[in-house]
Image 1 (tube, rainbow, N blue to C red):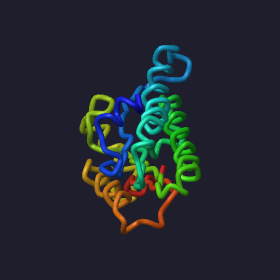
Image 2 (image 1 turned 180 degrees about the vertical axis):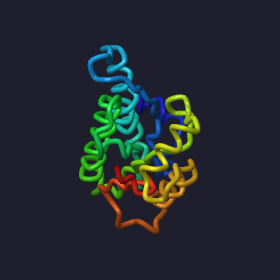
Image 3 (image 1 turned 90 degrees about the vertical axis):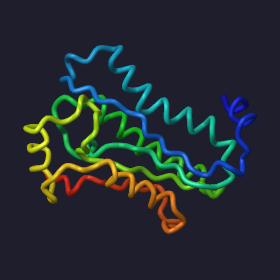
Image 4 (image 1 turned 60 degrees about the vertical axis):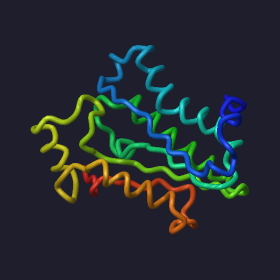
Length: 174
């Protein structure tokens, strides 16, 4: 894969990678099938690992931002595999920071809380109110709330921030 990409992109033109693929599966542990488990693993952990590996030879310097989840900090029924793989991505982020730091490449994670997106089918009014009540700010996030944090981490303004997970969750307090 790296050879195909290097034929297309010049190394000097590639500074940032944001691993932001994801989907939700909200089932109790005892009902998750092996196929569902494998699908979550492939998207949330295997995909970012191998995409980063493929693009790394094209990065002369820069930043990697991996999107994880605030669900890693609380045990919420029905999200165990999703949270486990997002948690694994947080650990992988720290290893990326360590392994790539001498190349001038930083790696950080952003852990969104409840954000108004289509992930998991979107939020109905009742569920949104429940989630908003679990934050110190009393609301769910907007995509721009997360996007501004990602942009900040990609900027040189945060050149000393590395190997961190930054929760963008409005003060998720349950």
